[in-house]
Amino acid sequence: MADYIQYFIEHSGQITAIYSVAIVWLGLLVFGGAVGGAQRERAFDPLVGWALVSLVFTLSGVFLNASFQYLAGGTLAAAVGAGIWIWRRDGALVPSALLKMILIASPLLILVSAMHASQWDEFSGWLSVPRYLMDTDALPSRANPYINSALPGYPFSWHYVTFLASLMAGYLLENAGALSNVLLLLMFGVMVSKLIARGAGNEASARAPGWSLLAIGALATTLLNPTFAQKIVLTTYADTSSAVAMGAAVVLAWFIIEELAAGRDARLGALSWQMGAVLLVLISLKQATPALAGLTVLAMVFVALRDGAVKISRLARLLPAIVGPPLIIFFAWRYHLSIESNITEMRIAGFDEWLIAYIPDIVGRMLLVLSKKGYYLVLVVLVVVIGVRGFIRSETPLDRFAALAAMVVLGYNAFLLFSYVTVFGKFDALRAASYWRYNMHLGLVVVAFTAYGAATYWRCRLAERWPLSRLSWLPIALLIIAPLVFAPKLRFDRAPWTNFYRTVSIDVAELLQPGNGLVVLDPAGSGESAQIMAFNMRPGMNFRGYRAAFDVITVKIVTDLVRQDNISHILIHSHSPHVGTVFGDKIVPGQSYLFKKLGPSSWETLGQWPHPKNAKR
Image (cartoon, rainbow, N blue to C red; front, side, top):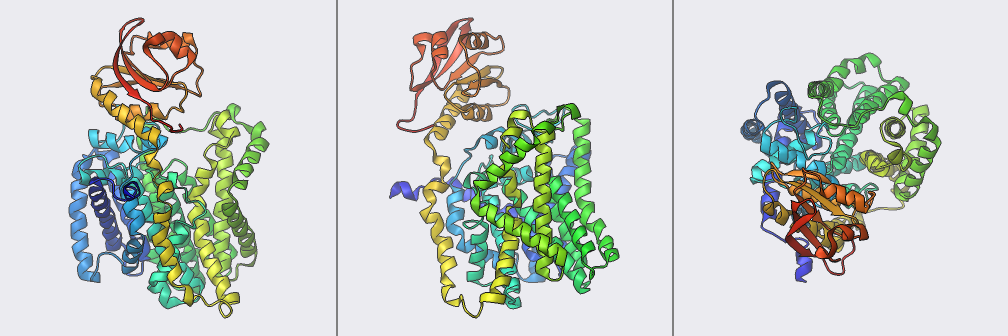
């Protein structure tokens, strides 16, 4: 029983994590509410506030080289002022629907507050970048290289969230991203609840969803979400935030088209500025997300052109508010990368290196990946089929929503194919690397349309035969119980080997001195142990790489490696005949070792750690 309780209550740092992340998102929410106007969609206030903070931080960092800690202090003061103003104006800081959603989902939030980093990309980039930001107080540059971080040229909007929460906590808050992901899904769940009510023809519930409807919205974005993968959502990865921003952008685009089609003007200004803010966030999350932003705008224009009720001149007047904010931050960041050319990001290869001849193989692999995600594939096929029909008909709100969703789904997958051909190397392209993860960016677009479409179908065909009021308790119960049932699966961060690597890396970092160079040998491992080691090395210590199961390891390679002048220490996490030949009886299977080099072939054992028992790698 005690072990089970630790899934939810494990350490005192949970309190710090919850209040730090809550303060950050409360600040973003009040910023969004302060600038959004009375006709805004309140569910998206946190995204609008996030856009404002991202814009200020990025422009100040790029053009003024401003101190980010001073900016954070100013942001906190401004948030307090905005909060006081909103309290006086609205009588509350947080919409009641979001508060109810958070209360129902509190078991999940408590569980996530106990988690810590455990995934490869968290250690190599998504957490190392915010830590560099805390340590150096500046963006990466030639003068301020983020040495041990992968792809620091990625946009920084997601990093700002972890950075701000970590400043509140006083240390790097490893689960700030995971908690933020859950809050973002709940925020979008509020919108899904409203879409369901709108599709069901219940305008009163669309304005103020009840407990049961809110629980359905939360389930739609979590347990029933076809792209919910716990090792993505409950980490610091930016894919969930990308999906939320993409879903919000498409929903706002649809709202704008509906207002234009109905000839209403009152909400157009507020919705357009909100969409521009959401696109600003979207475009500054990952290197691929500008494609999502562009596809959303293009899809909106095409749907408007197809619909005879929409005057294109009216849409054209809204476009500066929609595309202006994202273009500002996009070009500011591109300018920064252009003058600091040592910052790494993924780049398009030369035309002669494009994998054009392999397009059939790549497409086949993409289809194979999707075929293994049956639930998602079925929904995507429905979206595309209904979307094509909707674009042709363009008569109802459902037609227009379906057309929007189908265009971005098809367009983004075409973009991914282009990326595999022109950006990824042959090895990654032929296995469609991370294809499922990229499709997660579309997940909430699919969820939003499915929710609205299912509610519309129920209203038109099933409402009289299938009244659902007697089951109103069920979604609430499911949302509360699900984290309790799936806790062992959700707490993947407690994996024995991951925690072993973390323990060893912390011990090793204590034994190293500035100027030391360390290499990791783990011939039976994936390389995860090396990423964790690099993450925990302190400033001045030099990580010299690793050799793992996917690398060629021979006696000569190991011998040449350990004789390099810039390597003073070697960490061995697993045994192999080649490693054993070089180190002899100094190592035995079932142990990890830290050696200090005394000479070309002379080593002193500084540490030794027994491996976890009966645990699979």
